[in-house]
Amino acid sequence: MKKVPCSGCSLLCDDIIIKSDGLYIDEVIGACLKGKERFDQITAKNRILAPLIHKNGQLEKVSWDEALNKTIELIKDSEKPLLYGFSNSSCEAQLKGIELAKTINGFIDSNATICQGKVLEIAKETGITLTTITELINKADLIILWGANAAESIPRLLNKVLFSRGKYRMTGREIKTLIIVDPVQTASFNVMGVRDLSLFIEPNKDLDLIRALKEECCTVDSFPSEGVAGLDSDDLKRLLMHLSGTENGVIFIGQGLLSPQIESHVIKELLELIQLINLKQQKGRISVILLGGHFNMTGFDQVSLPIYGKNGGLQFNEGQLVDTNDTIISKIENDDFDCSIIVGTDPISHLPYGLSKKLASRPLIVIDNRKSATSHIADVVLPTAITGIEAGGLCYRLDQVPIELKKILNPPSKIPSDEELLSQIIEKLEKT
Ligand code: SF4
Image 1 (cartoon, protein in one colour):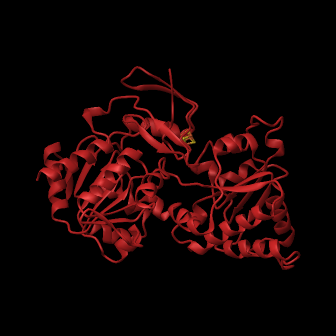
Image 2 (tube, rainbow, N blue to C red):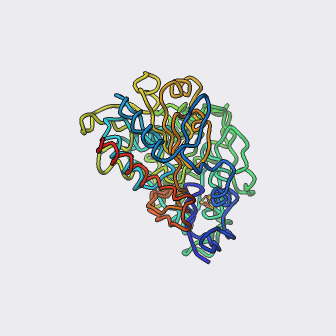
């Protein structure tokens, strides 16, 4: 029996027990269904076990040599290569991805760019109060899920932070208030207790709510009698009372606020509201945790920011970083690419149709361990080991805490890790 971290989501639970004979994982204890599915990926039907090349309208198995030669050929023919994904890879692989982008004068961005990355960009201006899961387990008394369906996206999060007792308290769930701000009644509402607050906000009215709260922080009794954003004035008062009275509160910002459709000033004003409340607080404070989904969503920020001063959207030219505000979205929108290398993600399914269509219209190299809509249309598919099971590496949990993932089994057919494969590509490019 071994205790290992789970790479099923960005919570990276490090209390999972596995029984393994070194060839297979026989039993997984303590993981949620999503985590169990992650461990089952080793033998899943959608697993990619051999390199593939698109020939005569379909993907055909080929040798590693042929697949790598084709990859090099596509990269060499490209003047504006795009690298994207990396949130399901270790930090070591992310660093290799950046090295590859530098070698081929490419543009590299991670999944975080259309998720939590923009919050960190905005936070450079407004400031941000972060916290850790451990601190919440021990001290939280107010948990707010804003546009976040934690029960389904990060299944064990509420077990840990809401139902825990913690080190410094004799009480647990009974002193913790849960507030959910969401236009949709998600599965997370199922854990609401009598003292909790369900706020069904009207769709896309988050900014109105944030502004009303900011206004009330500055001018008492400014809530309009008819309410704001579908919430009545009693709910608004209760919300503000909890926000300003908490000893250790946290707002989990979820996909409802992190999605690309949400304007960045919504996030900016939310961060400003939190700073405003924290300034007025005598002893308590509110912190923020960003609920990115992929298991190493925060890793790219940690790898890129200290070296390049930017947490994504890195453009290289002649081996040097070039100043740009581009993101993966603007690059595709403006047709500013002629080949893409997609690592561990499925943009064809995730991006709007217009962007997917453009991405699909140029040569596409996919590095992944599972079949997806993107791998289905790729010119070359290069399989890699599953990080956290068949390959180890450093990752960052959603609260920016580093967690070392472990290699538990050898990958089948000697498949390389993302890091090893990217190194091989760099080496081959340097030799040709
Ligand atoms: S919550 Fe996430 S990290 Fe924890 S067991 Fe479930 S999938 Fe794995």
